[in-house]
Image (tube, rainbow, N blue to C red; front, side, top):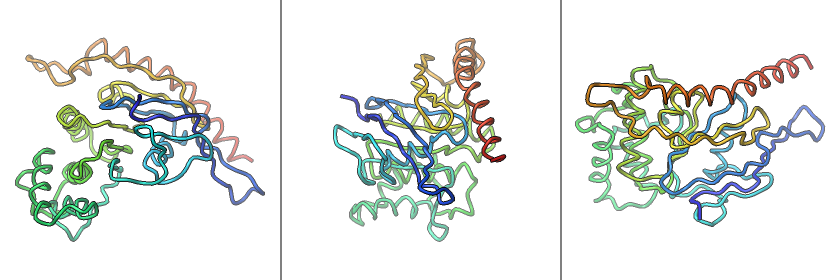
Length: 272
């Protein structure tokens, strides 16, 4: 049995300026995700990527169809799913340690255990020695590391990530991609990662699910067989390999027509 199952999932939102009208974000999503898999979802702007993640998080309910996690329907948020957003959403008055402890408080971890576990996960994301820093004293990449540590600390089965590196500079983003893959390999979590970046999708994912333009449907799921992503003994970067370029081109080709279609739709709606 798959860890996560989307079964004919659709999501529509009412539109206030249309009499009884609705905006369909996702339409008939069928997708299985294995336990311990790193799945990346890409698609044009407005295709419903974030809506798909919100549905899996239990933050909203499908209009039709169902989502199963370990065979049980997802109906609400739960501690079995950790979420990392593009915005760090850290508490500014708490230290890095305090922010990680906050997630543990919410899940009922006893006070005497919180600090030790929070330190363990700050160490996991490479922030040992920064426990007493407040968010304003940390770089953007470090703040995102704290957010990841907070989501991991209460040991969810599934980690949901909505463009978590989009606001970072290229060097920091690549560093955190390496860090995230290392954490994934060490913890064995099931990861569902949303991105606009094709290179990021190929570098991170075991499979890449390509969505169509609105309403979002699964156009194709591309297996990525690149092996280890870390640099080789002579510093080779897998991003420079012919295999990487082939996967990037294949996914770009799948997305090209969808992006063009999305732009046409935006123009038509703006003119209406």
